[in-house]
Structures are given as C-alpha cells and as structure tokens.
Image 1 (tube, rainbow, N blue to C red):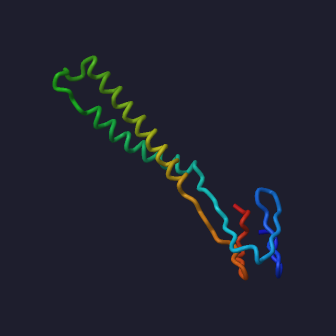
Image 2: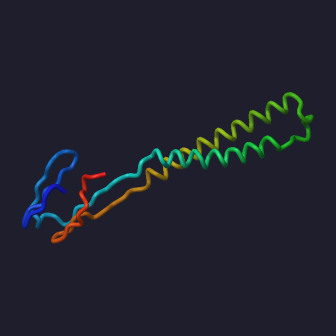
Image 3: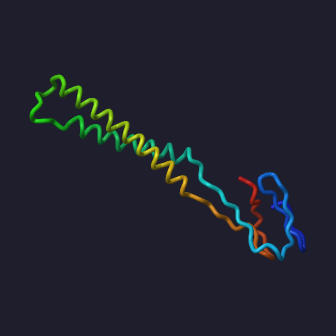
Length: 123
C-alpha cells in the first residue's frame, strides 16, 4: 500500500499505482507463493534417504536362481540399486516442488477503517 488518506487508498501492483476511494475497497490481501527451491532441496534430501534405503534393499535381495556375486547377477543388482536411488531422488524432488506450489500465503493488509501496517508490495 502506497498511501492512505481519509477517503483514498493508493496501492502499487506490479509497478503501477492505483487509487481507489475508500468506500470502493472491501479489503486488500497480499498473496505470495512459497519459493520452489527450498521444497526441491528438502524433497531431494528426503528422496536421497528413501532412495538409499531402497537401493540397499534392492542390492541385498538375492535371486535364488542366480549364483552369488557372479555376472550378470552382480551387475543387474547394482543397476537395480542405482535406478532405485535415482528414482528416489526424482520422486522426492518432484514431491517437494509440488508441495511448495500448493503453499500460498494470504495476508489481509487493509480493511476499511484499519490498516495492518504491512506493505502489500513488500517481500
């Protein structure tokens, strides 16, 4: 909010100043989305943990028809573990991004006759 007088409310939205008569304004709400980076990093960390556990399970699961530690069983187990780890990273990161996309902050900064003191354009 740029200004407030007895009868006028002035706000700036995306760099453009708009003036309203106070009786035209029911409320002013500041809407902000959460940054996607922190969700991606948190999801990446969670996905890495889940992926490591899953990769350990896959790597230690033995096929009774396959000789222990012999090609191709050892290679296939390593590939399966790697795929499981990468899948954990991808799913975790995507989950973090989607979660952050859903997080919206709505703060009422003005109601007729009262002003919260929060600038709707800041942050």
